[in-house]
Image 1 (cartoon, rainbow, N blue to C red):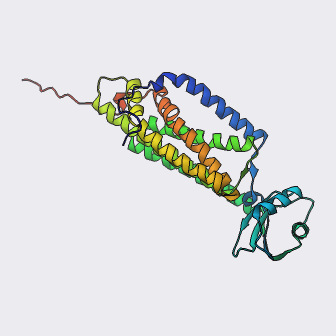
Image 2 (image 1 turned 60 degrees about the horizontal axis):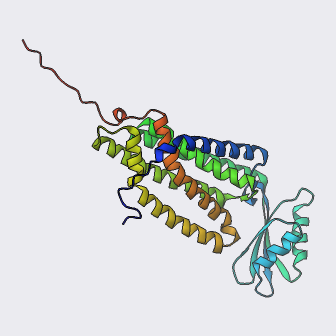
Image 3 (image 1 turned 135 degrees about the vertical axis):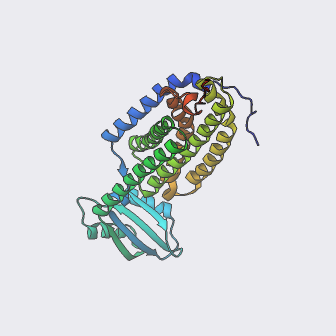
Length: 304
């Protein structure tokens, strides 16, 4: 099954210099945004109050969310348990104690009865954030080791830079637009790393295969051929995944918005980076056929 003809001849590598500039600008912009705006951490990282309330009649979570927003509270609202139960998650306020915050929220809904209140302290949030960063670091190190052993160290370095490039751009957009970043969004970032890696490995595997088949072709020609040969597979996979996460973003509710948005951004960036970051960087680092094709040793018999 092919989306395009197998013999497409798009010269992707001809634009690699512009891709370097484009990626560098986006990367610097994302890093600056992270330092200036910081991430808008969710309840999982900052700590807050989680209230389980029971209403007399089945409530509308959108109306509850709107009322809380009008009262000045940033909250996540979701159905919980029976049709009358709702879970409200609110960030802590410096001016209010936990009890005062809970009372103010419950006063907004006089027909609701408080069932349970839980507090997530900021120390727990800090631990979760540290564990999340460590998860990303170990994922990148494991990826580099695998690719270095499976292919060649220039591939490994290029792939590692690509995998750093993708999540930084996602975090930069979250920071710039002040989108809440919680554990679900972090899970999406880790998913994007795996997704991008899969695309990169597919291209790398075809590059290695073509280097062995086409001994006289240049490295640029091999990369262009390999990307064109995997283009249909890449677009079909990306298009299908994109349509699924777009449906999650539109119909999945507020709880899944962060995850779906990070995935949408990640699919676009990951598809781009597998060609113009991971692939083009390998060329920039001087990858050639001699690095993938073992040198044939010639033995000369010594005549007496």
